[in-house]
Image (cartoon, rainbow, N blue to C red):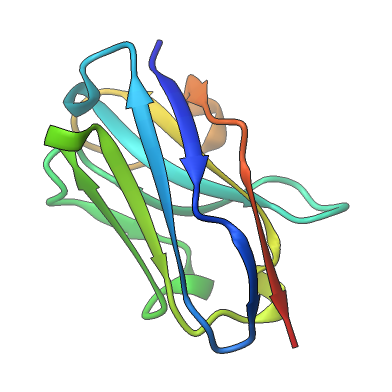
Length: 125
């Protein structure tokens, strides 16, 4: 499995931006589809975005389309989530996850077998 560490969370006002990073180690990063998920208090973990190994395929949940952008830098073993126009409903712990395989950036959490510890994003109104 690959080890994942997220960073970049914090407190931001509505309308602001944050960029989350997820650094991977332990396995060949480019062999994995990478995803971002989030979990708000009292809610189930939900899919945010995912990206194929080359970055040619990207998949977003509807609520973040046009506001969030997922990208990856395989040479740096890092995946990013640029979050713009943040809203209070985006408040959650954000997790990155790795799924074996090159393509098919899935939205299904159980298909991902490596997870980071999460980073808190809080958006104030």
